[in-house]
Picture 1 (cartoon, rainbow, N blue to C red):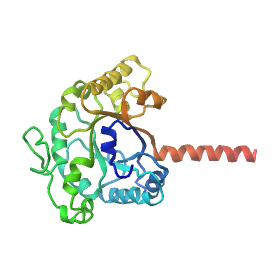
Picture 2 (picture 1 turned 120 degrees about the vertical axis):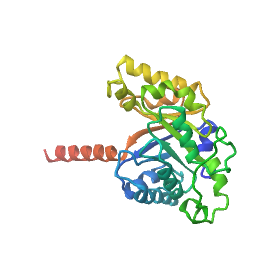
Picture 3 (picture 1 turned 30 degrees about the horizontal axis):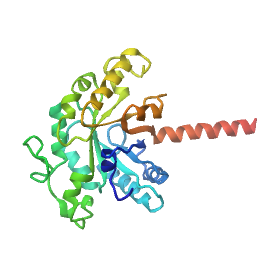
Picture 4 (picture 1 turned 135 degrees about the horizontal axis):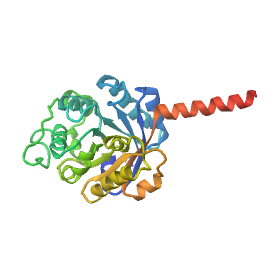
Length: 274
């Protein structure tokens, strides 16, 4: 499995499950990666993580391969919908195979800008609707290319970089057919909490309007050539999600895993003392 990237496995029909990392802790990143998850989502949007600390997290995740039989791949969620400079820094610090997730993508124009920011000019097999890539090139000097030692790095960017965009609004759901048609986008990632917020019903996942919106988004992705990915909403059955066509699911958060374990530990101690 380690010889085949997550992107290639998903395109061949495999599935992946993993947590999101919000703590900005290399220790937590290494422990989770050593557990054997298919992927870990390293969040730069709602966490303290930045490019510098994010590189330490990537090093911890990839270092865990030394004591795990499963190679967990990192996926970095960027902080904003289109920031080619930030994307460039993330990609330069990231050894492949790995992935990126860009939040708040509501239209095909933004999706195309995302795809272009992940590709080098004139380098990609597809010319991205004739516009080409815009990623600045420092291949001989970056961690991504193993400081220039990976001579196949530019080609590997085409084959082993998973590119996902996150749809989290009503407008985004309506634009899924156009977003999915953009060359260079591998998966559409659904954010159910933000989808519920976008219609004024935050977290009301039993509400018929919220359920209808999520189901419409899922169907639109299934009808496209993109992979379906997303967060697990509270209480939703994981098997039902994979049966519904999800290729990749993020279902837990490092800080919540720690919090839940701490509560259980304390309750056990209280019961013992009583």
